[in-house]
Length: 410
Image (cartoon, rainbow, N blue to C red; front, side, top):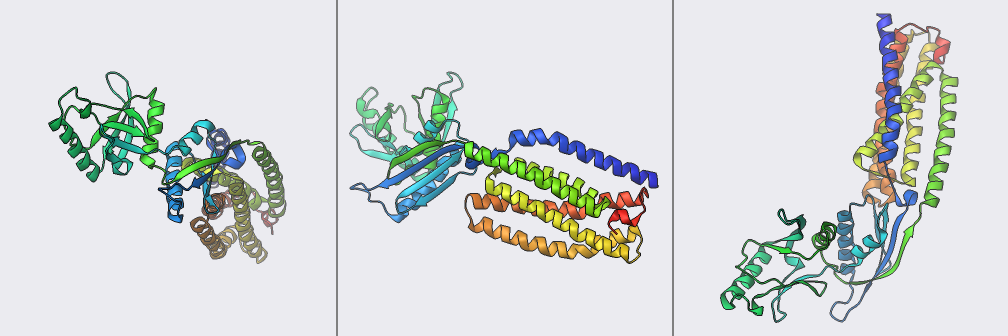
């Protein structure tokens, strides 16, 4: 029985160390870094009055919403989009591969219109429900397929039915032009009345251009005219330097924690160190699986949560020391330490978790990143301290390898 416990203990520790070792490279290769760590695109835009559309506070709210939708179409993780003053908008996009193309898409008005031969507006982007880029199966020609909403379908059906009924094939009046930002991109002749609410735009060089236009149309046209005041690529030099310094500080801090835990608490401290390694791997693995973006505030939240798990282990081990001094057996002392410390650990962590949730709900950008890593760290720290450390320590005690209470911190 004792040998079985020892074998199980060794097996769990070995599996834990192997898991940590094989997780390092995948985590490093797949973690998303924020603008402060890897650089990206920094854009400053300003809304401009026009005679037909003076800028209002509502326009700025709508402008921010459209920009958010466009950034989402680009697939950027954790962008920063915030208003500065009454008319300016700051947009920061981490890890952008093509800053010039991203800036061009952000600044494009994307005003879609369908017009008859005499310039009458049939429908516009507000009548659009979806836009998808596709390659035609036979010719591989890139097209943007438009799907109209109910009102747009009705208006388009009326307009196409009218030109089909009143103008013969080959007549220039039978055409309905498609315009994007005032420029004609297509002027097709209507063959039959279109009543299904679908249309196609062609004339793109490749599928990537079609996808960009489709993304712009899905996000909607800008509610006001904007001017690009500033556009620059932000280098990662400062961020990488900060990341390296944070890494060095983390290594030194981890070494100090390991030496303290093993030196002061001995065998329980060793179990806590193993749990700590698993904890770090689990937290980073969760962040990678969520597609979360790691920023300097996020690193701060992770380091803070490291302190939380160490604090939980200290509470448990102090209880263990007290029970051993009161002449309890090792097994009963271990069980008693975890049960007595449980309520204290839960109270402390739950209150911190509530604070992190509040930060996430009311915060933006880096503050939310800090709250996310802190929240994940709190939950995982409770699991590793209460479950993993307890399991390892109980198996080690039950194996009867070391019976001296002094090696358990007494």
